[in-house]
Length: 535
Image (tube, rainbow, N blue to C red; front, side, top):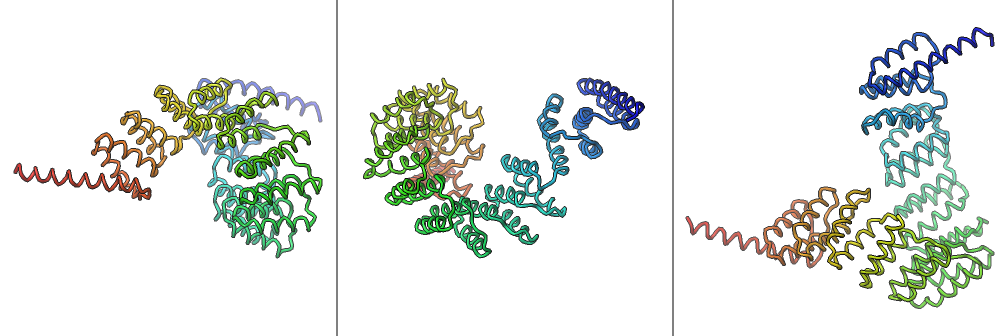
């Protein structure tokens, strides 16, 4: 390269760097028109513009709400290997309003996706993130754009759309992808079939899963381990354990590797179908086939066997097997034991399991504390439940909505309404969405405490948040108002039920509704009588 060209490039870099500083300063001082002027000067000089300058100019367009200008800028610019995340990290310093960042993100996503090969790993990652963020419609539009654009997706691209739509119950969309794939002459692979079977099985569409399975066999596509396991799960969920076991036998005949994962699914499915003897037999078969159980195997067995009293002695054998194979329990094992021992009322065993946490150096997690708090609450040891909750907070474990609900019950029992209110405020502040069960506990607790005003406030708030009242909600409120001789408020609740066409199915709720309606009609007749008499 000759010296004149090198010097020209150095001058270009120097000018760009100086302009970069100026534009950044103008962006900070909100002098957007000056930014646009400098950018146009650089365009006129036909020099290479650094991507950072493009980002600053892009931010200026967003600040003045010229979204078309921002799109045009990107389409005319070369950004090299700049990634959208880097773009956003820079923009966040200048776009302070949430709507500005959202506009920038939307435009940038469209720009980068249009420049990425739809069959590339980057594209699949982008689509997966759309599904993770719940942007299903955006993913659907993107899918149609690449199909209409003449792109022929590969199996990974088809798979990411199929799995995403199935996971979000968009069966019409997933069927469209399936049909498009076949129309374009793309023969579904075992990966695609596995995705379809697993998606339908997970959403209890067992017949659809079976249809796909049979089609796979007709097309002479040999199922892999994933497809086999998906179909086994489908039959177990459909409560057809015999078909599931036949698929398991077929796996062995087809020489599919028998791993601990496969055995875990079979054992778990049999236990869920109350086939305990068969589950234990499959576990013994693992030893015969030299497949070493893992910690998940033992957790599945312990959880399942503890449901059945006549199999309690087997638990000791399972724990002995763990020790012999030098497999230490994990947090799931110990939490499962806590849940089951509480269910049996075996408090001494609960204590021994709690001591085991320090023995094995295992830290309790949110599920552990949930099991402990729930168990203590059900046994009536509210003071101990409160201590467990406080310990949980002290180690910076964020409670979930179920634990918050348990603690509402505990504090209502302890008549500690201040802590009830504190939990109520915590849930409103954090990102935890209140459930109908949470509100039912609140409403019931406040009514029992004689605070009908606060119960009414919770009722109105839950409706505002689109957490819809159920049979228990209405029954609790109506009982509370009737017991406090507040017919007017009870009648309003009944009218609310009529307004949303709520049909009571609970016998006690039906009785309450009829009683309130009858009282309301009697009062109305009495009022009508006195009105006529006064005339």
